[in-house]
Image (cartoon, rainbow, N blue to C red; front, side):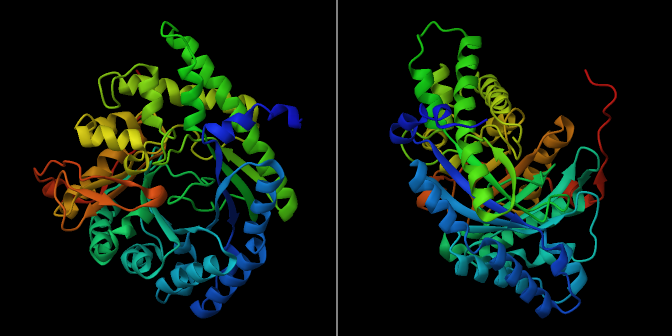
Length: 452
């Protein structure tokens, strides 16, 4: 039972510790918008999204004023568009243009779902949509794209991995005059979840209800502040307990906002994703939480252990606060979006290899990492394959969102501004994986019965 007493303690968190609802995301099924005529299908897509989401921004603003809780983004996610493209044929970019237009017309920040799920192979529409991603992301402003290339049950589709390396490279080239921004809106997953409210990887799964509202809550500053008040000799289990209690309070805020938004919009309430999603703002960093635990700088030896504890404690606290926790729910480590991560990368303490190790114990994966502009498609594919393997073997969601900074070299800076932040171009290994990537095929699903 929710009541105002449950959230009174969060007033200070909102005012001083950067607590916010990072997103209210409406998920909308477009399965009934499939049509053999792509123009007619696009009309159905526009009409359905507009009909359901036209009041989403207004609803978020009403809730913000009522409770004084900042809601940073209002977003929409839709059924993977490759499903519609497989029925309609034609140029999938028409769907991207439609999504972009309806997103602008209803006033949301982003729309996700220009996506394909190809972990076990390509069905009708998948390859065409994937090959259209560079054009789609270069021609639109608000459309986000994702491709799932592997899963624990299916293994890794190495043909898709090879193709995605090329797509990431081509997208960077097509948007090089705009800081290669296209790749900031493209995520390659293993074990993608169907109810993720966070961009750029959000899509509305085909097993979801016709229309739902989910929320993504973020409070790295709140967790850091709670830890800063603890004595220096506090044990690790005491720290874990504090994180757990703090995550409980944060999640109750998300439950309140999500339940009320769904009721006001007349749709189902989906989930609360309690991921600690950082921003470049001072005091809103996951890296600084790890440093508060006792590391001199994020990336130092011990980082993976501290992050594992943080991720686990966040999940435990959230699950006690809501029966509808879902999405990714943990700690995000996007380099350019986290001031502590930016500082660690600039200092050389944080490398791609260390980030890869960290992704084995936290939410998502290699996120918002700027790499040299001359990085080849094969190397990008190999980075994707490595990260997908971590997700596949560990039965968790992992992802890659890397930005080849065309024209920039290691050590130089790429600045997106806003929530996407900025960061140094990080070092990659140039020894070629070309022969392995060219093999294609599939890495078989792992054996699950002999775990040790």
